[in-house]
Image (cartoon, rainbow, N blue to C red):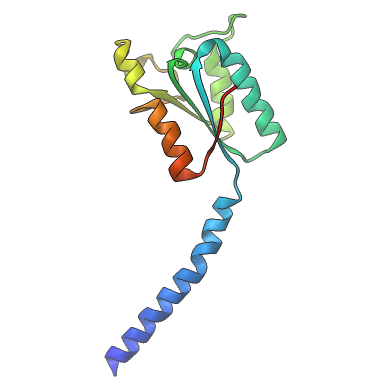
Length: 146
């Protein structure tokens, strides 16, 4: 009798978890997720402007900025735009709105740079291009390249 009750209880939990899974997933499915790809920091000011405009038009969008090659330059400490404004200020402001900045470790290694060269709030990922692919394939991000 106890065995039948346990099986009934387990089946009930399984049905409940299956019924609730779509509801839990649908909240995430409704969130817009975008990965911005940058491989040339000459476009960094435009990219940051695009991200700000994107968040203004669609608040709550989950945005990741992934750089590799010359695209990491604006995410390095003391990097400045052509007017002498530090990029880190814009990055910190956008980060406070949920934007993730990601730097390619392969690029750091090839340029003989250490993690200390990377400005806060950027995080290091093993490979920039692999991160872009992962975000698209596994997490449902759409791709933008300004």
